[in-house]
Amino acid sequence: ASADPAKGEAIAKKCMTCHTFEKGGPNKVGPDLWGVIGRQAGSHEGFAYSDAIKAVGKPWTYEMINHFIANPKQYAPGTKMTFPGLPKAEDRANVIAFIRTKADS
Ligand code: HEM
Image 1 (cartoon, protein in one colour):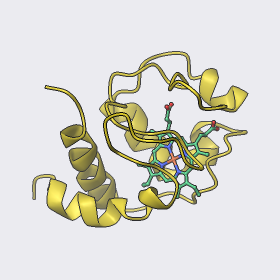
Image 2 (cartoon, rainbow, N blue to C red):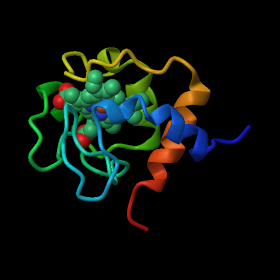
Image 3 (tube, helix red, strand yellow):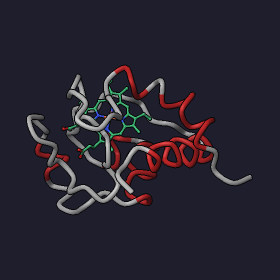
């Protein structure tokens, strides 16, 4: 089955405990994630990132986010994203399909 942003939105409720996905949305426990695909890791204005996220050192791609949210502490040891991860590949694909809708153009 192909990735489904509507299913992803339901799963993303978990992310919304800590993140907004709105343009100009506030940082909460985690940074606002509007437009995060293609955005330099650790670069959202006004958010105090860990060195682990800053060390990623390049813009987030689909693949990078897929790996990060599978197991955040394994992908970026020292991250302060205290979320255990989404073990199911299908859930990750759906969440990222949702994230893709939360961007300009
Ligand atoms: C960082 C995605 C759940 C807290 C990030 C980043 C992404 C992301 C892509 C990097 C942002 C950037 O570089 O600007 C997600 C997704 C989630 C999720 C897709 C759900 C599947 C959560 C939850 C929490 C959380 C539930 C809180 C318990 C954080 C924090 C950071 C972060 C604190 C900054 C990490 C650091 O500086 O080390 N998240 N997140 N996230 N997230 Fe999440």
